[in-house]
Image (cartoon, rainbow, N blue to C red; front, top):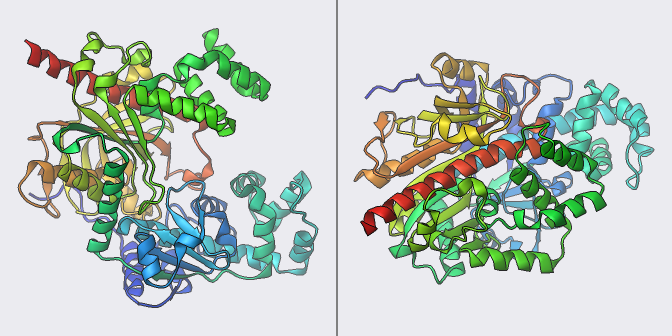
Length: 576
């Protein structure tokens, strides 16, 4: 069938993508310098001032948050699927320091000098990493040109790593960079303790990244996913996956387990004492407002957030206690540590439910029937782009049956507000060029009762893009005219895998594809985390913080209620 939207990649974006893939075919190092011109030429909405002389603070913040701190000293970036790949090429990464970025889950190793090895799970990681490195280098070199002047060198020379920058110093930096003071404050927050070393390094020399792709075949990616599944299976040897019905959930690593175990709710007094003693006055006022019904926030969500803060400083005894209580209700945490790439998972055995502990929003009629269930939830910390296809395909091959596919994640919105939840029934996938039509098992009525601040928009149209930098005004306008207002990266690849769960062949290319014949649930919930058409205020502008708990938990509650209801109905049918 003819697709519903025209081809959307502009010539400039297509040129950029073709350029870096053709260069990465080289067996040697590829200089990021060779990509700067095409990167600037695509007019990315995430890097609106790439070609201008002024610093693009939002692009610098976004890229800084998605690179580990050692990027200050890094020259060479290696890309491969797992430690064995790097070591096969002579890079003993198991002996290097493992490092992480603040806002991107990607296993990486630093040699302590100038080389950084980053694991990739699919080509979507390349579409993510290369533009991030290019943007960071462009903005680094703009600041280098500013800071290498005599005035700039004097400014950097008087900075002290052992003290915070004062207001005058921040104002001086903002004036020199030609950006608003608010942007410098955001940049200072993003860099934290690395601010002074970063500015000193920028003043000292320009950045000249080089990249080397060690293994990038489809087989390499599939091997990496196979090792991930082996780790899941070996970590939970007591679970017979081959015989289990599995509700697959792609979300995060905190919401579902918090709701299921109720661990935080049973320690509300402890958490309130912690908030008072730790001086979290803002949280204390929020709780008091909740109690007085001055704000519509959820008390349960409040304690989940407080528990996150508490665990950051808690000792090992608390973490062992939490793990023991979680295991008693069927929760198993599966760390990716030592695996091929960073993708944690959890299993929840539905038959081990404790109805006295579970979040009260999940207490459906006859919930005690769950004790007769032999199904489980497999929750994964959502992957990036095409990694979603490989992930769901691998899981489906190794479990008894898929009972439902539920996808929760962040998205950009072209028409909603940050914190709103969007429920699509149409997804256009830029990887396969397919437009998927499906019955979303969730409607606004399923989510709205649990959302305090935002709005739930159902019957939406979503597009799964190749990368966060790979859109510009012309690209977005095509979708907007066609009614596509929900922009993210995983739904399309997941639906390509769903197609192969219900059809006897590989997913097609460039077609309208109906998934209505699926006999299991398909549920997709996206919460808006940024508005790309509001130029200069993108994903790098900040985080949803506590208020981000509202859409996250509203979506998670809806997912768990749906799974519980499905399982209760099935058990009723079996026993009548």
